[in-house]
Image 1 (cartoon, rainbow over the protein chains, first blue to last red):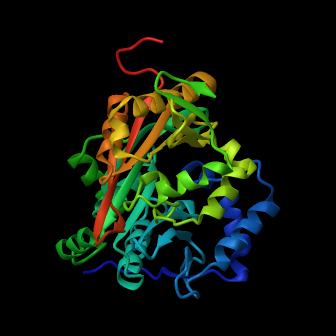
Image 2: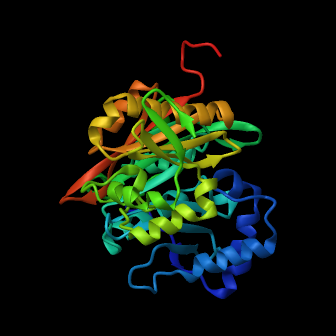
Image 3: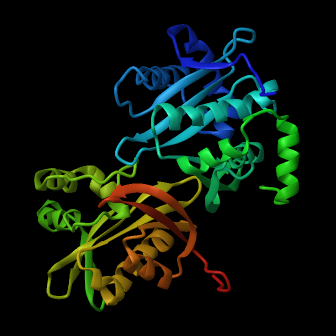
Length: 208
Length: 178
């Protein structure tokens, strides 16, 4: 039986601004993605307005930012497709789950999977890339599960909490995602925790 | 100006725009000239002159490489300096492919490494090259850079997909002391 969730992606509205600003100000957002804790709320807000203003409403947007929403739970997280190149048919993807208790739940894996479907099936892209910090094991395991390959490994590349950590560059080609879809027709009919355990058993690297 | 045995390396200025245009017009894409979306850009001579005359050019540390006869053989620079993580990216843009394998290439990379490690006290430098730039890859590999990986099919050009390789070099090479 395929996994079902009521979560869906949509464009952000003005009413979402406070939610997204609050997420981007969280230490976790800056830890796992980017941002400067010294930045004023006003600057963060202006940046988000700019980000969300460039939307899928344009014929060929340079970036697409979508909210993951749920009728039952409200806004769950944010998906950013950035550096979209229509010449190379590629983009990079960032995902942030604002609801912490959902981060290790299947909804995160589904959100990644559905975002990749959007990239390949709607935007007709050829390649999706992601830079993920080595300590963010759950994230890069989800991308590996979706068929992405670790193409780049840069040691001591990002500073967090006074320590330099590695960064992995992942790449997923359309044909590889299609192969995963053929091999796993039920898509995300699994438990994320079980998936992580299975992948960890297959590849014993800790990822730290 | 920094004189070497075969080259003289100096800050690039607007008068170098014609030579820089030659680099952009070489007929094949270069990793160092791709924009953040990995797309090639085709600036005009005027735009290049303006860029070379801007204050940003100084901040980005962009240099012209001359041979000892005073002819511009290419450009080089450091960009994307991360103060936090103490690394930056090196750019080597020699006009003639053959120069990469000779003293001009070696001295250009040596100049960049001296600047990055000696003057800026960085711990690591990165360099990128497309699969269509084997001579640049060989130059970086011969200067202590090791591959960090290859990102596949990032650029579509000339009717084909191209991979980009990221090379890294730590300040202190494995097996070497300070």
